[in-house]
Length: 133
Image 1 (cartoon, helix red, strand yellow):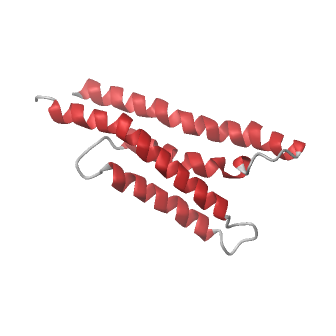
Image 2 (tube, rainbow, N blue to C red; image 1 turned 30 degrees about the vertical axis):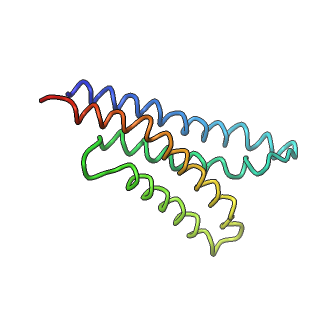
């Protein structure tokens, strides 16, 4: 059981590193390249951070808090989706703070998380349920 928990956390860490890596590479390489060359990329340079925020936060949550009965996929995804939306809305009073494209990107990120969650996490939950103690 303990070994399975460590393997699950390792898997979630690897999955967390994918959106985190996209985030870091996007901020350090992609966004400056797009802005400096004046390339129109359909606002991807502006919104990719919101696309990867929900998956990154959800899988980071699973690293520090393993699967249990209190947290279902919908609850976790909705909590992090709402937190990203609230952070976006808190930027309303500031200049260039609120952008509807970021809200759309957050919705896309939440949908991608929901689809991948069923494939990745629910399989682990079934294994834990079926395990004989």
